[in-house]
Image (cartoon, rainbow, N blue to C red; front, top):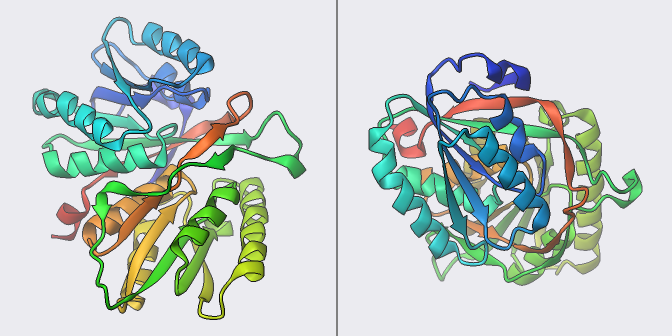
Length: 329
């Protein structure tokens, strides 16, 4: 069940006795939102930081260390080396999780999509006995340093790659079905479509009834339309194109949407590229772990709008994470 909780309510005892908080340091102030409201008397804090994160993120790291009251561990990650990220997660979590007496709370908000998916795979491999909860602070507004017509979150596209731990199972005799989950950008989506040259393409964007807000839905729709225009200009006559909605706020509903697409297209090799909320990205990860024929792809950005990426909303969504295999047994 997904709960939407005012951030101020994290100041009350968390109902499942959090013993470990895991958060990603970021240039976004949203990385502070849950931690600064959480009661931390008996909570260990694991802070993850990308080594090239910049001066704004460094300031936020110092603030998060202060909030942690000396009970923190800072782990450096290399955003460009997924294998080192996985090694770091495993190194610190393998000895730590068995000693947890309460539950774990992961703030998914400011992870990259790739790093969040790798963390989910590590949880799957370690099979911790403790409860794991995940939180996500939505944005009140994106691209705060521009007007609505010039929203930008990232620029440039790095080398598109399969997410570590989600390689899929491909058959040489099958054609490719690409599923892209559009967020608030279109350049990276276009690059993914160009690289994969799919025989079938599904473009997904947020369900208006299951988006973070009506304003975010309108922005999401705007970028979907940009992607659609790109596809219309460039698509091959051999490419079948379809669209559908996905829940931006419920990872379990998002998982079911992706699993159905894979089932309906089981005569294709399926690649999913999630670029919407971290909640829908968790859904993609769960779907791929349940149906391991699904590959997940990631298109890293070259530049982020660090000065104005987002402003935090005053609520967070929280849910209990259950590994896909366990949930389906």
